[in-house]
Amino acid sequence: MLDVCLLGTGGMMPLPYRWLTALMMRYNGSSILIDCGEGTQIAMKEKGWSPKPIDVMCFTHFHADHISGLPGMLLSMGNAERTEPLHMIGPKGLTRVVNSLRVIAPELPFEIVYTEISDQEEEIQMDGFRLKAFRANHNITCYGYSIYIDRAGKFSVDAAKEAGIPLKLWNPLQKGETVEYEGKIFTPDMVLGPARKGIKLTYCTDSRPTGLIVDNAMDSDLFICEGMYGEPGMEEKAREHKHMTFYEAAGMAKDAGVKELWLTHFSPSLSYPKNYEKQVREIFPNTHVAKDGRSIELEFE
Image: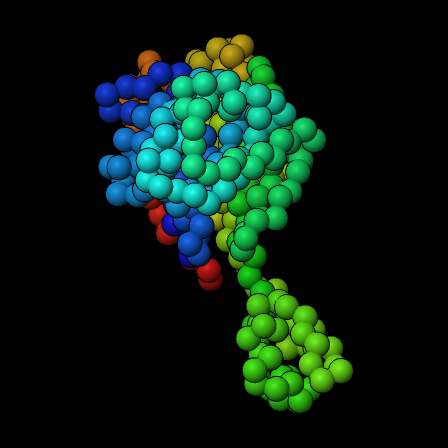
């Protein structure tokens, strides 16, 4: 199960009823945060979650509304007596940007491990899940992310017995480990069936529509995508500022065959984005114009 909360849905500036962009996910004891705009800590408190167990922070790009909450977040994590290393992932220049922000958060009781992305697409294997970064089309270098939780094939007791595999080796084989025992080597494929459908979430913001986004969002259980503008007639402004309209995001969701679309990263001038949900659903029916704190539990089939 992947526990998902869209902490903030605002773009450019925080509003009294809308914090800036941030997404938090929890899986199997690990916590992942994508972007950390101003107000992220407050949104996290409102959800009832803590910043201390965050293992991975991903950044789409280095505009202030996506990273301005970081110094305070790091200080809170340090004050919570965190000592485990924190893994940060983001575009090239991440180390320099974070160290600049840390001028006001210089002393931390934990190490920061940096992974800087420079290719069009890069995949990073984490503990129990995969992260894939893909290039978006904004006015500075920007990436979207897909989170994959793979699921191994079903364990066959009959195959294990037929192969004469001792009972104590079943558990590591079920976890995908190769085991050597009494001079023999036992591999997972001896006892596991074909891989089953896992969980996939794709997150992309601050971009024009691109084929690379559609390709990486393909068959996602949940696609969270920016919708800067919902009002009709904003296409030219979206093109000028390298953002997306609700309708362009819905078109990509349809092309990618995703199960569900959440729109986020709304313009401050868009006071009631929900007013345009009906029109967007004419393009992609399972669209939700998200509010801060929107949550879901994605489960294996």
